[in-house]
Length: 131
Image (cartoon, rainbow, N blue to C red; front, side, top):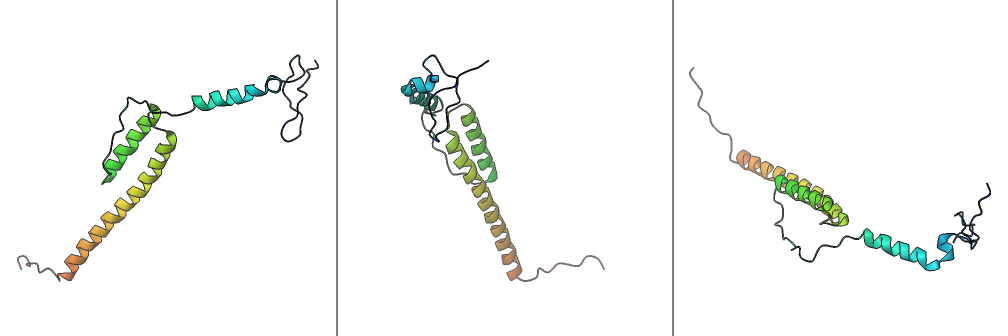
């Protein structure tokens, strides 16, 4: 079975390998505006637009790991429901990792500071029990 291919050339100079219609060209090359139209429709279908009736909720900065967990969980839920752009959620995820690390470092610093304060105070005398 001899199936003719499109007579048009691609941007690289190679011959288009799509099946030709009665005109000798494939469906995209026979109507140059069709490729642009299909691309536009695809882009609009994948676009994330927040509904205008949905208010933007302000959030307080997370102060501990539990708060970070709650924010990330809410972002996951919002992406799934198409209320949040995945790119924004990706940035939130990255920032959540940085924030968790800084919370951990701040916690360690405060513990070390408390221990240093205790050590500077000197030895604590204890009563010896029953000898």
